[in-house]
Amino acid sequence: MIWMDNQRDVSRGAEKALGIIGIVFNLLTIALLIFSILSFGSVQNSAEFRQYLEDEMMNDPTMSSSPEQVEMIVDGVMASFGVVGWVIVALLAISTLFALLAVARLGRNRNPKLAGIFFIIAGLFAGILSLTSILFYIAAIMCFVRKPRNNGRDIRDDNRGLRDDDRNSATRHENERLRDDNQALHREEQRLREKENELREKEEQLQRERQVRQTEEQLSKEDLVQREDLKRRADERLRKDGDDTPRRPL
Image 1 (cartoon, rainbow, N blue to C red):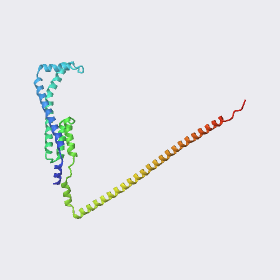
Image 2: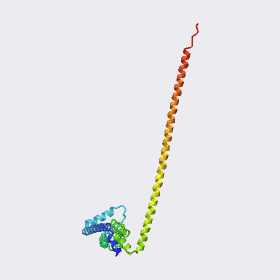
Image 3: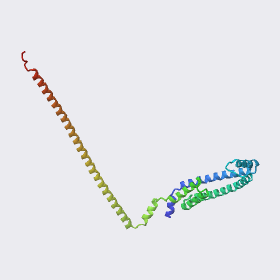
Image 4: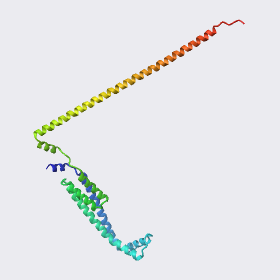
């Protein structure tokens, strides 16, 4: 009963859409083939059409057949076209039938795996590697792969089947797990806080060192200015002393 409820919870809209698109492609191809077969049947007995085919084959440089052989080839092509066309129509009709069965099985989500098998068979009859068969294969894969969702009904049924001691034990284990998680989070938070403090201290130390270097550079510049000023004053004093020296009379 639980399995049936779970299966109904799975949405099979994508599989249905792919199946319906493949069915539409099959029906369009069948209609086109039937129209082609009937059209060809109306002109295959025409002498002009037959003569046209024979002339085209005779003018083909890749063919070195005699007129008798060309006539036999034309007879074979015209005779087999209708048979091959109706065989393809029959195969597509079988493919469409299996695709309809697959979509019907997905209608109430009764058996997705069986629907997937029907889609695979429909793809094989649709041409193995045609566009329609690829759509059917994708729908089949989705039928096999997509799993039912768990809902609240399953949890309630499981809890109803547990004994009171089991529920208490599960609750205790869950509380212990939560406590361990909280402790781990607290330790991680403390580690991050210590790391942040360490980075802040390093940044402050670098800032102090930068200020010390700037102060030393400023003092060095001031010292250099003072030395240059003293040197300039000394030079001026020497020049003045030289100018004050008395001149000797001639």
